[in-house]
Image 1 (cartoon, rainbow, N blue to C red):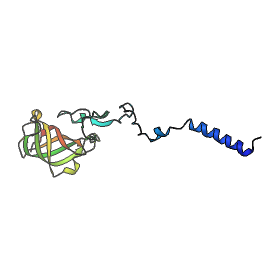
Image 2: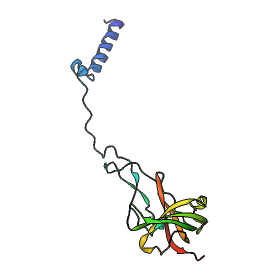
Image 3: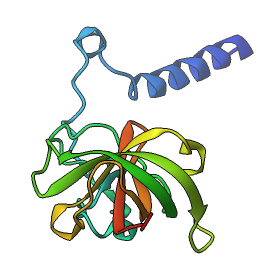
Length: 178
């Protein structure tokens, strides 16, 4: 007859052997860990970023580019930018200097002093704080009436850009008779 101590020993031995069947061998435990399988882009999708869809020509400032989500192309296009909200104002101004835009010969660069500013159609007015200040305006040179420095005029003005800077664009420029 077996003593209870022997039964307990046999039971522990059986349990120990069953546990060894699930363990790694000593050689496998000391081997270098294997590398995880190479991942693909499908394994870790990259979130979309915001980028401008396209540029816009002078003369259509109310049709500024719309920001839409695009997948990163890996070309290093830089950080996403957010365009300023649509804005428009009617200004009266005095022309100080007229020249060609150095970035685009089809545009005229007007250095003006803003005399007054009012909102159009409840749009934000980005020129109301520029009264009595000199500002550069861009406009389509083909549609610019013949005005000389010192001439007063009215125009619709909008600001286009992002947090890094932008420009004021003018259209519907009309000289004011003295």
